[in-house]
Image (cartoon, rainbow, N blue to C red):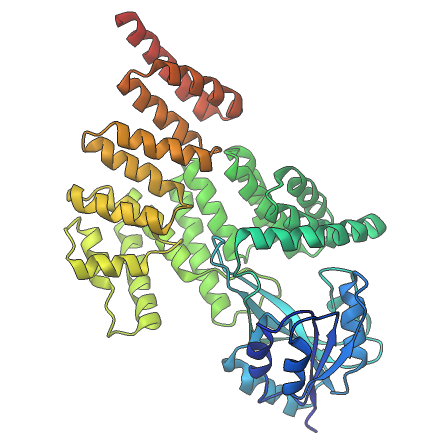
Amino acid sequence: MSKTLSLCMIAKNEALNLPRCLSSVNEVIDEIVIADTGSDDETVELAKSYNARVFQFEWTNDFSAARNYALSKCTGDLILYLDADESLDPSSINELLNIKKSGETAGYYCTVKSFDNDSSYDNTMRYVRLFPRIERIAFSGKVHEQIVPSLKENNITIRQSKILINHFGYNVSAELKKLKAARNLRLLLDEYEKSSSPYYAFQLGNTYNILDDDLNAEKFYKIAGGSSELEKTHRAQCYTFLALINHKNFKGELAERNIKLSLQLDSQQPFSYLAAAKILLRNGDMAAAEEKCKLAFLLNQKLKNGGENSISIILNSEEIIYFGLMLAVNTKNEKYLKFYKDELFNYYNSLYGKEINYTKVINKLFANSAMNIQEVNDLYKITNKYNLTFFLQLLSQNPNNNQVIEVVKRFRQDHPSNVEVAKNLAKLYEEAGEILEPIEILEEALSNFENDPAIYLYLITLYLKKGDFDKISKILNEVEVRFSGISAVTERLKSIKKLLASVLKLT
């Protein structure tokens, strides 16, 4: 017998998001139930216009309490729970209808794809969002509430599905993300103080990571990663994020150690393999980096094609393809170069269709050729956070210096938060015989990227060329203090000091 389906939600001041969310489910939902926690915009009126049953719930700083209140008002056999900043993907309608018809009492893992222009990756995770309405089943946890523990306690089968939920809540500025993380921090700390749960340690690590608090993020990732009570996949993610924090802070050996621990715990995560490839590249092991990148691509394709893994971060294909291309160019590996170029052109064809041909400009870049106006405009259209560094690498080998400078200047306009653009533009001006322009670019970059030792070292060489010894002395002291733990930087400083001493002797 076919089952009925309730959409169960909590909301506050979601008038902007609610129409997209509710419109996405109107073909499959038999009932909409919303617990409103104090809206003072048009949320309630909009919800009622979609025939939602709206109940007022006084906010108590407890997400599970609000969700369980909404759950208690539902009458459907099955519960689908969404947030207002989410929507059901149209491709999932038929599968949901089939699940309703099947009559089975089970929970279902769904894919939640979070769009995030500010991050280096789009976070695609799998969560149970569809489950049977049974009186004993309830959410737990004041924040980052969970339903799976209750389903398992009640011996409910949990199946995989291809249901896709699009999440737009992370597609905001870094500042807004930090505000949301700061709001949740106190609730998470309260939960952790009460239970010492490794799951909340994991979520605290994630929250401190968003807040750029590396010290506390490391502390809680270590606690969670070292706990045998936490799912292995979550533990593996802890070690991957620890490795990325180490990598960011130029602690190469520690980064490599933590990424190995991650892959030992879970060898099926493309995100971890790509992180490993980036760490190995900086540590100078190009062959191992290529191997890990290829594994990241293959596992990612498997997950995108419906491979079963309950908790995973599915990467944007472009990110892996362009990183693989960069490695192949650096190692002159023709086999990998062909593989990733073919995958890139297939990706563009699937995304834009064959009538929009971006392969021409890509081939021009590989050939180090001058581009016409259309090709330059095409390059601007396809440049994003995944391929910008690779395009800069190819352009740095292009002999058409004037055109390259204009292109990189435009990149700097379009991507002001990318430090590699500033460094490349400075180098181009220096190669063109300029000295003041690259210094100005790097001094500005230094105010925004003070943790990048390459900027300091590059500035020292430019100051040396200009003969500005006062600035050299000041910046040398700063580098020695800030990067004393990075052996590669300290070795480079020794060489610079020797060079500086010989120059001063001559003067």
